Image (tube, rainbow, N blue to C red):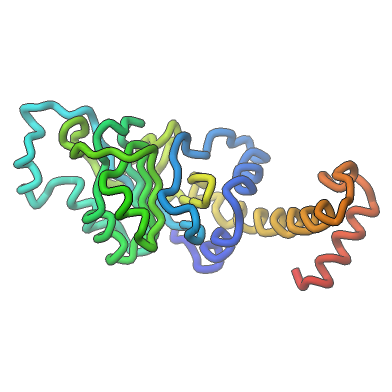
Length: 238
């Protein structure tokens, strides 16, 4: 399933918190990647379909630094094959003791038009990555090369990232809180609902900041709250 421009634009306007609630309504409780944070929390939402890279524990006799001379090395191939508009999602086994990648590879992803990069491990050169106008999410900074602990094995296969299953083509959305995984077949439905939820939350925020109680307002169990919201939407064109 290809992510449409409409759905992409909708997801760029909503929070991961709102998306979590929309998914929870459908019984999906574990879609928010754990212990992963943005290097630059001031960027617009990251939105794109998952293109994956899987690491396993490194075995020393198979993972010397010379493996990078192989033009088919999975990490390098993933960087060059991740489609424009997609998000490279890396399964680093939640191990940030060695870096999943560094600023050169992340810069290459950015220049190729990739939408962002996520790892449940760490990035080296994190200050340089944080200065890029490019969404990058990791657990924490890490200096050692990935080869010391991670062995790149597969690209574009199902992985686990931060205790969440990620299938190729799933829709990744990242904001200042972190990253959520939306199953591809639900993306349009979730995006449309999240837009509606966001409109209501914006209305509620205005009301709360004006001094109104949340009782009967959030959720809108009072008829007056529902009427006020309808009038607010009309006035705001939302």
